[in-house]
Length: 116
Length: 116
Image 1: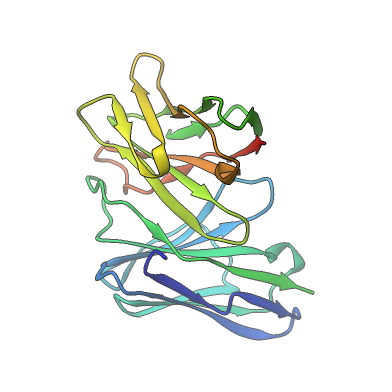
Image 2: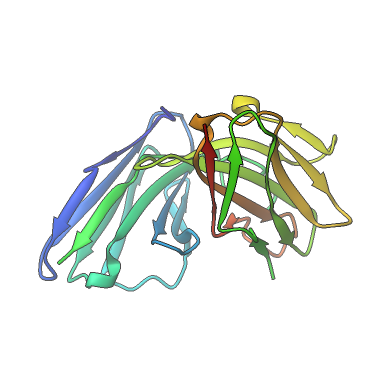
């Protein structure tokens, strides 16, 4: 395993539900990422946190709300989602993030989300 | 603008034969290049990366990749394929140009099918 865990692994929710995805890394990294992986599409970067500060929001709809209480934990709060939001949501971490960083990102196993 | 292309949706190879998964890129500065593999229902696993130096990079599970600056390519190779290598492979690039945030751009993925 990579040292990045995600819970739950599978989630089914209705469009009016509120749920949260959790990511935890045990690697001592300072940067954490949320990606969306849909079928037949490249990975889409959603959010980046570097030393607990959000450094990237890739035009993500407000129904997705990230939270990074510390460098080891990252949450993605979900509310009033649409069926097209069904996808695999991947969390990743790296030592740090920035324009000159050559650090490798390490990924968790993902949460398979289905919105009914 | 940064971009990565994996021109083949799927590559089929017989077990024991050499394999190549192609990747080309476009960046403003010097490229930092990565290969990841994804097995079914799993997250992405890091295979190897090129930052600088020797154009032939060796990685996990017997994989290697050759950086070719003139052709802007970073093809993944393995001398002898195994059935267990069957998976989805992603190429990714980070631009060292200082005007960028350093985010990783992924290709759309190539499915490798190794037949016994």
